Image (tube, rainbow, N blue to C red; front, side, top):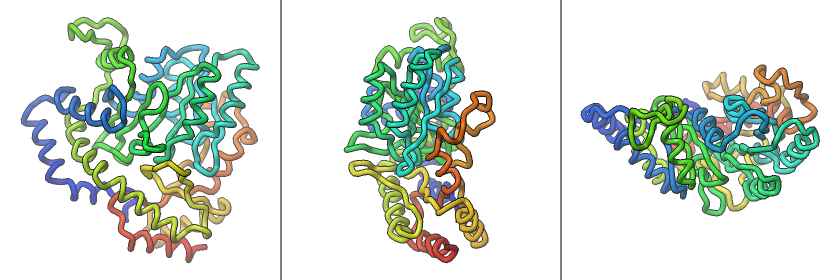
Length: 375
C-alpha cells in the first residue's frame, strides 16, 4: 500500500505522459517554450487568474511573489504556525521577518482571530511594519479568505495565498490560486497536481507583476532583448519536460481525480466519524485533499495507532511533528508554546492517512478497520 500512489497514477496516464515526454525530447526545446506556455495558460484559466508564471519550485514561487510585492527588511510577514517551513522562511529570503500565527484546530488553517491579534501586537511593539499575510491552504482546504482578506484590508496589507497544497480547492466556486493579491503553488510530486521533480507557479491579475516575474525568473532578462538583463533576478524556470508531464496530469485532475479524492474522503469520514476527529470542510468549501488528517485523543493514542497500522503495512505520516515556532531555524525568536496552543495540540495528535485519487473503497475500509481495531 502506498501513502500517495504515484505509480497507480502513472499507469493510468502512461500513454499520455510518455507521449508528452517524447514530444519534448524530439523537439529539443527543453527550457520554457510552448509546453510551459500551454501549461501556464491552462492553469490560469482553471484558477480564474489573468496570469500564471511557472517557476522552478514552490519555495521560489513564494519567495519571488514576496519580492514582486516589494517586501523586504523591516516588514512583517504573517504565516500560520502549523505548516511546512517554506511558508514562513520565504519571508527571511527577502530580508523580512516572519510572524507566526496560531491555527483553527477544526480546519488546521490560519485563525483569523489569532492573525488580527498578532498584527496588533506587532503594531504595538513598533519595530516592524505589518506588510503581508500568507494564508496556507493546508491539506488541500482553502483558508478562511473572507475574514483574512477583510483583516488585511483593514490594516493595509497584501495577501499572498500559499496554495502549495491547495490547488483545486474552492470556496463557493472560486478556485484556490485566485485569492488575494498574488498566489503560489507547488508541483512537488506528492501535491494534488505534482510533476516528476520540482516545480511551482505564481498567479496574479496584475500585468506589471506578471512582466516583473517573467523577467526575474530568468536572471532579470529584458522582455525585449534576451541578452539585456535589466534587473537582478534568479534562475527559476520550470523545465519543459515537467510542464509536458503536468498537462495530462492536470487534465486527469480536472476530469476525475479531484472528484475521486473527495469520494475517498467521504468513505474515510463515514467509517471514522465519532471514533476519531475527522477533517472539517466548512459549508461552501471544497478540498483537494493533499492529505486526509485525523486527530487522536493524545500523542500516546496517536503513536499506538500509527504503530498498529505499520504492523499491517499501512503507511501513515505525521504532518507536522512540530510547529514553526518549534523549528530550529526560528530558535532565536524566543517563541513559546503557550502562544500557539492549537498548533501544539495538533502536533501531538495529528495523523495523516493514505490519500490519492486511485484509492478504492475496499482499501479505505481496510485502513479504517485497522484504526478501529487499534483504538
